[in-house]
Image (cartoon, rainbow, N blue to C red; front, side, top):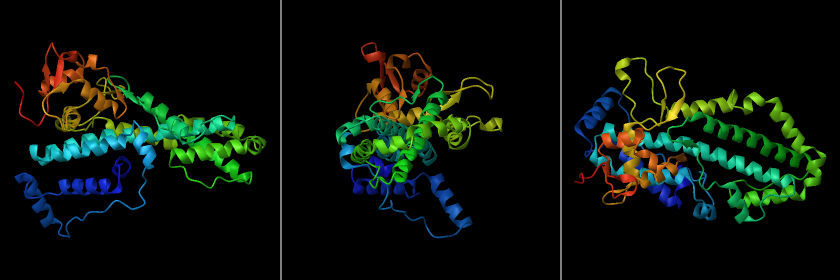
Length: 364
């Protein structure tokens, strides 16, 4: 994600090194962190940690796509990592790692949801190409493949149905794309290009249109429909990869539920929590206190003074979470913001609330 969300390879390398340096316990860390580092090294002697560089062949977006794609969770993560690194000197190491973890949890699931969305859109392009339609040229392909303002979850609503639909769409897309590629190969006109840019998608769609007769003779679309029907449980995320993806999202975003009652408040960086006390209660989108601190800090990074609550809505939207800023004042997020001292209620401000930087002097 660091590689994908950075403009240049040098940018990605610099951020990767800065993150490694921040994770390293140095003389600027708090006393407990340095003591614990010393103790663990005495228990398990060995060489010091060394930086593992980003592989030279790591996936990257085409320069034209990176410049024009509006919604890219990996790019937002790259910005937020820089902001979180800057906050290290303002908190203890334990607090800082919790802030980092909260951002990583949200970004990881948003990135997976984005990848599924892109794959689903790519399959729609190929499906249209089978009907002599689909994007023509790089610009149209970019418009069709990359989402602009997607909403994978809504604040306060159940999280799993929307994510499950996205994962199911990915499985269908994976099946459809492979069916088309194998059919082209079987017809003797295999596609030899790549798949990693809007230009590649446009070329592939044109290749499909040029060979529609051969694909129709092989009944490519019917083969796709037959397999999808035969594997309905897998397509609906009831088993296999889809079920694993749903569990991944729930496990990463959901609040930990330890068996020990004394540890129930341990996880404060969650993004989902159960709506009720029962184990069968649905998971709804709701931020823990640490997640709120992290996202407010990232939203105000590089700014001085308070800003409209709209900034937090934009920050959540960059990861695919929809929220109406007018609802914040009355929901649990507004309550969390007030409890943490992160807002200034003002009747003159938009929505009556201004965000305050969490790691700066308080504004009176």
